Image (tube, rainbow, N blue to C red; front, side, top):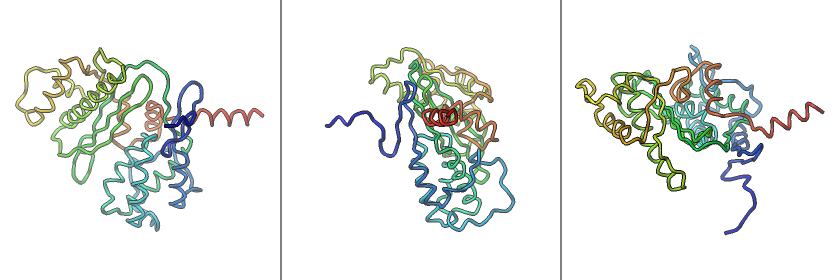
Length: 299
């Protein structure tokens, strides 16, 4: 083993240390992707998704090629290591790698244009308290073809985002409560793993982890000791979550939909809503770059 000095690059992730914090970004990796797609000089946009698709899609010669579409989309998955704000878009594109159509090439181009305008963005790691908190959300029957729901959840250690997931559920949920509950069960499993990992690092978790959900029916079901026949089809998830509530591993709390951070992982959002939740995720421009630009302007 060799001591190579302070870390600055690791597997394509650039690491800086401005203002007593670490900042992780993948600007050079993103630039290479834009160069491959001939979009380094494209016009940037503020939102990687759109709430309503146009009626007609322009022909994208390069991005419409199935092999190139798979190559770029696969590469974008690695970019989500420091850019969870694009996790939902990449997840949606990845679901159509077997047979990409014109609308998928259109959405891929939108995502690349968004990346072009946010090359300096990344994930900060700040020195705060070590309290673990998590957010869970689900978009019920969001897929218009399969009617499967999308689970989205994330966890913060203090003010630092440490874990996030966007995943289509395996089976069709028959109610919004069911879809939300499946997301809750998946996040509970992730929380237990994180708590065990933190304990191995000597960071004791002697109090339950706050888990925020905006579905009151799911919260009521988790805390109801009387099992209802109409919810029998999610009995395993229900018992799993309730056991960890009783064991003081998690503390299930309500949150308004407006403040639900995990909403950014489950659906396409309007630009103001997307930017608001992106800031909640702490995805921001590199502070050292911003300071340099301000210093140049002052001169």
